[in-house]
Image (spheres, rainbow over the protein chains, first blue to last red):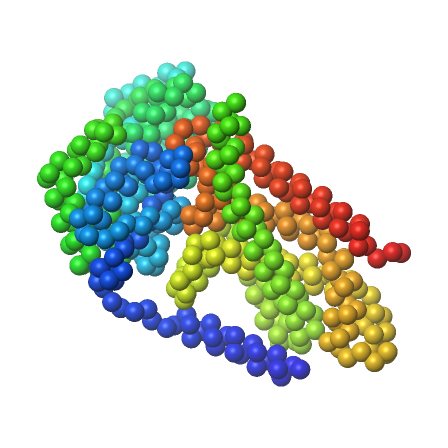
Length: 265
Length: 213
């Protein structure tokens, strides 16, 4: 009986080891996409107007339209797969998806694990305060004297870290990080933070929503790297293909028309 | 009013997925957990130690972290859909907790039961299957009911893998309408109902099959 158990255990351990070590097919991603006629694109559909779901559960938003147009030009079908924003980069790295588009900036941190297409958009960021707050400044560095909240893993977080915390202007404890913008907004409303830092678009939504009624403190560009499409490292053929179509679409005014349609500046 | 006519039906589109994830995680978790528990109690010293280590490891880590790790490990080996990867991950996590519950229940069956079964000529496996397990599972129901409540709530974690269960549906709604509070309070009420109904049901089951004393 005991002997049998040991044998069973050995077999299980060996199976796991062997299967974990077996290498994946090294074919180029772009070849595989052409072969299946389908590109699987990860996104995180909770970020209006870039990517969200309509009442009928269709993926809609600027990024979705950009990606569908790219797919059309590539001659392949686009299949979106919804993931949590934090899981997207890993999903690309692990090859669970061919690419990811989610208003994602190509930061240096992310470029360590994935490659990015050329950028298709660089937008303003905004600092918000509660309607009854009397904070006022013109230099964004003055935000260092207050409690700041923003979405984790975003360029806003890196901006706060690089410009306020690292130079010693602000204590690290005064930065609160959240998974989602609504959580930032709810804490600003509750007074747990004094300033919310967001991308311009969601920021404007919270300003116009009477339930929040936030006010603009400062507006400007924080990102040095704009929004791009993430792909697995070393997939030069796929990157070249994406870059070509994005550049074409930027030159033809396709992107500008789309941004205007969705009210993005 | 819009809450009842628009929001609730929208969130409930994820209900079947929440229930399916929970059922797979609890069911497979019970299956693997029982095997783990039986092997840990009766499987000999070495096996018992290895499995205890496995269970200790799984119980020491945050569920969301394990979910991501297991998802990306499983994804490396076989190409599973996010639904199955998420459900299986939760099942593996739950099997660790359920094995503890069942191990405790097996060990609270009085030792005389095994001796009595052996003395009337049953072999060890028969005795475990026909005498120990039926009693142990009755003892296990109250703590298992607690685990069931935890798994129902943990099923919300699969949203990070993009499985559109009720919490993710609420997030879609909140992203579209910018009404996070309404969406989250509604989804909270649904989780409360699910957990409440499950626990009451298991209470009834326990009373129904209790060994008369």
